[in-house]
Image (cartoon, rainbow, N blue to C red; front, side):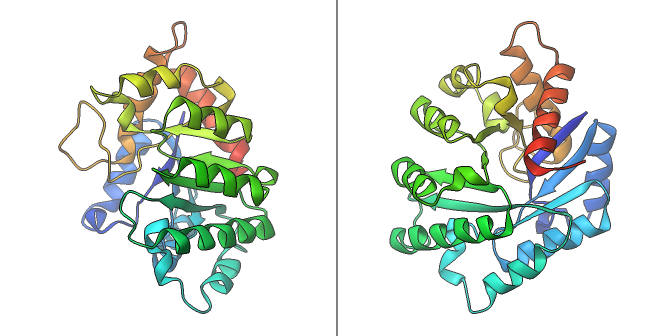
Length: 256
């Protein structure tokens, strides 16, 4: 009874065995997936994948790395895609000052635009933030993102970012990073997050959890994230964490 809230099932690394990857996850107990858009093409691919599987849902939007490519008509196409009932979120969007593939100024401008569009579409936002905590929180506040809610995906920030995100009413989603040997501080933060604000994800094909490091990540491995979270919460089983995080995902994304 698990929901992987952040996958990239359209990734070319799955081209040879995508259906087998999905089947393995289902056998492992993953009842639903959200597959994520990072630009117009991947958003369209996410919706197409969701249409082809009753248990796959989609998000649409433009990753901060890609916002320099936003062209005329992109936002209108997102409006069109959002009419599809399988579209449950807008993202991943946000700020990434580590690589600056798009300039920080353009990232901030497009972040605001996309929050505004998400509010127009009444979709929760999926947030990517790296080395941009102050600006991310400020823009979310100024654009009243709390009205639609959302999740800080693949959370790997510090205790202050967790506090700020929770105060905004957002969820925190933990990935395979939680299982990494050097993630001691992140595991400590995970113990402080209210159970009703926790989500789990793989971010596959990236960030493969222990003990599968070195392999391509896939949704079946979200079980390792649930197992690690359970280990951090004495008295809770893997199944308890799976059930709780699945309920949270259904509530946030309005998945029946």
